[in-house]
Amino acid sequence: MMVGTVPTSVPQFILLGNWLLELNFKRKWELLKANKLFWVLASVFLIHAIGLFYTSDLNAGWNDVRTKLPLLFLPVIFFSTPAPSLKEFHLILYAFLLGCIVNISWCYIYSFILHKNDTARSASRFMSHIRLGLYLNMAICSCVYFIFLHRSYLSKVLLAALILFFLFGMYALGLASGIINFFILFFIATIYVIMKQRLKIKLLCIVLLLSAISSMCYYVAGIYHSQVNVNENNYNKLHYRNSNGRLYAQIDSTNGQKENGNYVLINVQYDELRTQWNRRCPTDTFSYEPQFNLRRFDVLLRYLASKALTKDSIGVWALQQEDLSNIKNNINNYLIPQWSYLHKRVYEITYEYEELVNNRDINGHSLTMRPYFWKAAVLIVKSNPVIGIGTGDVQQELNNMYVKSNSPLKKDWYKRPHNQFLTIAVAIGCVGLLIFLFSLIWPMITLKSKFHVLFYPFFILAIISFLLEDTLESQAGLTFFAFFNTLFLSMAWFQKYRPEFIQND
Image (tube, rainbow, N blue to C red):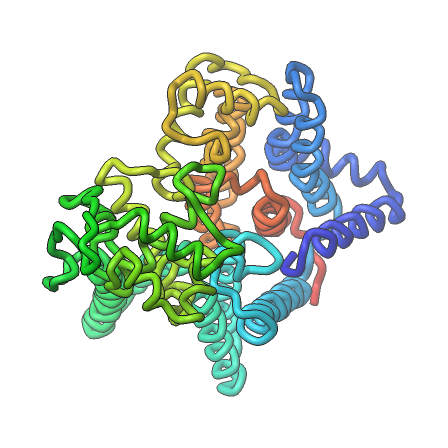
């Protein structure tokens, strides 16, 4: 699961091939036929397959159904095969931890040794940074479980060190969503401990919880204020002419963009910026028309502001060679190469928030575009509430709705809903959404006393990811949910209904 698309797919098909070679299909069918939980889980895949019958884009529909195949064949395998013993379950978790170690180690090597990677989003090499955050949080929970399980102090120390390794990995690679998920799990776990412990332990847990929340808020607030609090200096005052006597333009002198506390859109001498930049970088020239690299103009303005350099010929010629290289690589702030990935991600979120509250362009900003994704999805659901628009038509119908609703999003940012519940409702309607919700809630009711302790953090992580991402639309996200959900539910089901099929250690 942790090292790419092919390494994720091949073992699943090996499992399926092994299941076929075992034969004994009559016994397997008897196990599956009478298993209500299996049919509840399989119905999520089946309803997507039914959506193929009324989709207009059959190719996209087949691709979607193919991606979701593990939602069917993993339950087939797990519910018709003797449940793993506790020893085998632990072996699975250890293999998972090893995969996480390999993943993070390669990300370190790639981003910090082999390459100088300044983009936080590309720090995760095998999957999106959001999916990696899910896996690492699950790995941390597994380590905590083993710490309480093992008696050896050496084992406890090694597992604690592994937790720190994963936490540092999320920090170093800028997995902001992963860190937020960790704090949510930490908060819930602390509340649970507080309810179970004596007064002194309760007070200690409360102090730890408040310290963690305060530290996170202080860290984020520090980055936010360093960007938006305007510096009291001569740079941020409005000037009529520059030192060459040429007129400055004042684009936005009230709530304009800021870099490191310096206004971006004041005191701009257009002609000098263009001519002097083109002179310094003749292979990277720009003009004011979009077809002539207008983005370079935007990056140059923000970069000069970040260094408090005048936005004219003097400012352009004050740039060092490193600055020129940064600007050509679309780096907006001279401090960005010095920041950790997490600092960069919080900086991006700060910038996105500022753009939103000041009614500026939200295109390309993942968080502030989401309300427009959700709005378009809701409008489609209202028009097709019962069975949706079909498994393969989601993207095309969203594209049409963005145009129809006069969305401020540009065509390049016509994306899917970034909410798994909405995505399902768009594709297969409220019927499909109710079936999906039932597949999540019903097992919690029927098997609540039999779940392994690790099921609960997994379930919390899955629900959080469903609210903010199309988790089941990518292989990494779908495998995370399908594998762990099927593993935990099958173990609980066999323990409650068919304990004779549980293998002994």
